[in-house]
Length: 118
Image 1 (tube, helix red, strand yellow):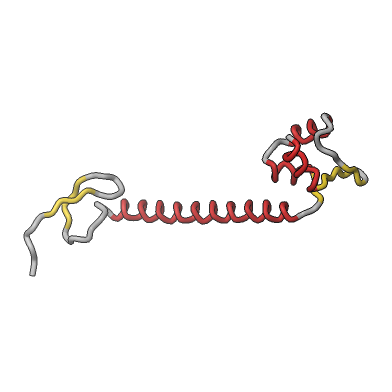
Image 2: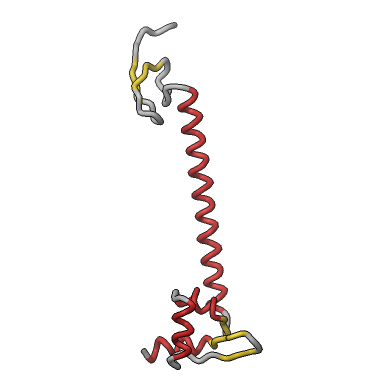
């Protein structure tokens, strides 16, 4: 049973018009189909990677929030400011620091005081 109906469609990838033989055809050629497939796969991989990155960042912040003593980098991550700003807070005596050997640590309660007194 062969039908003589001619149906025109627009390719979902290249947006050109073409005649279809079946009612489910979405692309004008195998080439457009392959490119669209690769684009879908690429988009899925990027989305998955972005999700994993977001999860990792969130875990880092949650881990940092739970600590009692923080280093300068963790303070920067927690508050969302630069290292230079943290050192400026040290210089202006707005934030107390403690030296343990060559390491600089900040007590979590000092950060909380910084926001309650401001």
